[in-house]
Image (tube, rainbow, N blue to C red; front, side):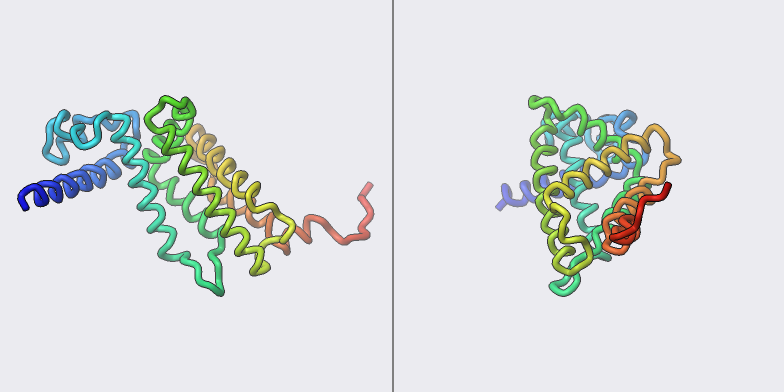
Length: 213
């Protein structure tokens, strides 16, 4: 019984650490968030804090996982889908990107690790590989739902479009870190507007329209 209680306390402490770390990294960024500061906030030594995660790099991978959990809850609340009304992906993604702009430290952490973790030996390599694969599958499925509802053109290739969505989001985040004046949400909203049947019809013009000279 004592071991079970000790295990539960360990899980609770780990959750406390991740919640505190999420807040600190969101405010000060990956580069300025130190293990010492995180440990002080939760009343542990640096060695005691890393006991729960193994290494600093693994700690930051778990911070990214916690960020995903928070973002998922944030997006599901106002944009939950139903059998009759799949979520509006344009609204979902623009809201997510707008939220990312409000937590620059976490966006910095994600972008930096996403680049570094391309090396197979990086502690975050498996996290990003699996995250991208799962996210593409989920979004491709949602695109198919939107196509079935007539909200997206039937001719779009869901799997390819899903990959392009994440390429666009990641690319916008990189540009935004160099120039915070870039409106990531506005750019993404424009992209989705281009995909809607009405926008596609306007862009294409009348079938027999002759090119202007």
